[in-house]
Length: 336
Image (cartoon, rainbow, N blue to C red; front, side, top):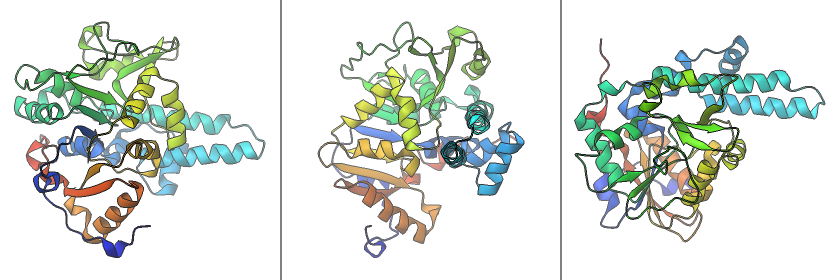
């Protein structure tokens, strides 16, 4: 591992870290959503989740509110029970239950459209349109909403998501033609899959607010959420491999060759498939955000960890609060 002694706690402002080179690719994690709406934190999602007593006990015993950590633990339980030659039905049911609870919690915690004013939408849209490709592992609608709301005010370039007029994904129709391409690497609350292998997105024209789309899913429904929330990278890869859209997104990230900005993403072990994709191809510059309130020692440790993860790529670390997606003024205040 890169010696911690080689690192410092310094975090440069984004403008200084960016320098005078181009950054065609942007990878966005949950830190961006949390800066916009604090209820996207795992602790808040946990409070809103309708969890069984068994699932609550798992979170409690692990002393976490992180759904991926709990799901990973339940997955390990499945492996052990299976190795003992015993039925895994009860364990598997809890795994699916926690995944469903996370999906519903994201919907319940989601900020409403009316809370975002045009200034916030425009700020986000300006960031998106400043890159050739935008990848996100976030489930929420905020980036999608910004793309729609600001389209006629922020016009540097069009942003596309590969869901065309019929709102379904066609792997043979993925031309970018100078537009900013947005990729939802782990799905999102407005995306669906069906038993025919098709992937698509809900729109308001499908019967109301996108935040009410959860009502479209049931045990007998023809569609279900396109939502990757497994607790390990290996399990996530299995789910991604079953979806033509998600497979396309991950392949596209692997084939990116330009410099990358990583904002609000922890690059954790559960997302090692993302790290592998970033490390594909020729070495490049990768700018990674870290929140300054992380603490000096933790910043040093994170810089050492991420430097090792990025292999032959050259990391640049910057203060997340100095980036347009992380400025405090973007945060939506809570009403009393």
